[in-house]
Amino acid sequence: MCPPALGDTMDHQQTWAAKLAASSGVDVRPVPEGRKNMTPAKTMLYPSAQMVNDAIRAIPEGQSVTPNELRTELARRYNADHTCPVTTTMMLRNVAEAANEAHRGGAAPHVIGAGDAEPAGREQSSR
Image 1 (cartoon, rainbow, N blue to C red):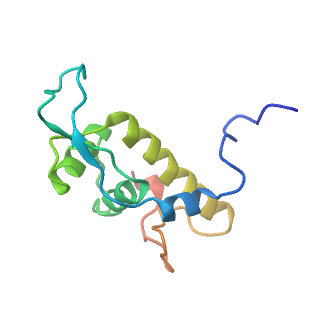
Image 2 (spheres, rainbow, N blue to C red):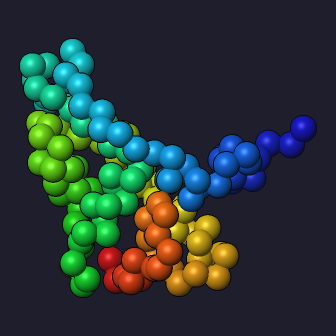
């Protein structure tokens, strides 16, 4: 059996848009022991793809945020001290892949939220 093509590591049973739509819930836990630059008594948000998508869609047109600023905003929204950088990166990929799927399907290149019937109205290139 051949290995999957580069970038083709997704489970073929579920689209990226379906993964985005299925991701929900708020997961805030105590910071694990041994986390660099974080106090164990603090809390960490492990964001869902939908949380990341909503935060991206809330960025005003023409503005951008860094991944660190995105994590800070997510932590503020969900009353956590930190947001997991690894989980955030994974969810950013999910959001981007879902937007790419939609674009390949004929939609304008923008981030689409789960259940959206209309485009978010912002092109990715404006970032």
